[in-house]
Length: 55
Image (tube, rainbow, N blue to C red; front, side, top):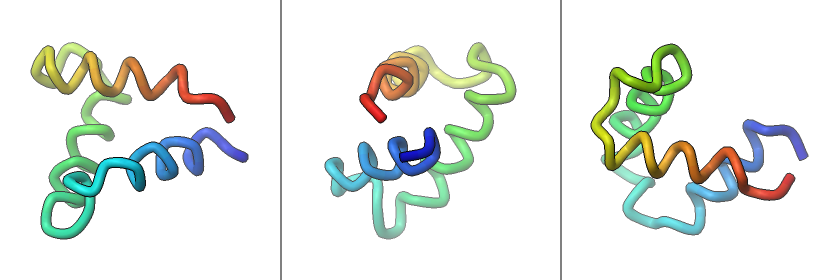
């Protein structure tokens, strides 16, 4: 499974990340990838944890 698919799988486990919120979360994640310091601490912690999701 690629890294992108593992992140998607992790998102599937969190229903609040889907639906109307998905574009917002995707934008936050893209901002995090470009510059982790550009997102709020709570989101950075969440995205940091996604880096440890098994492939």
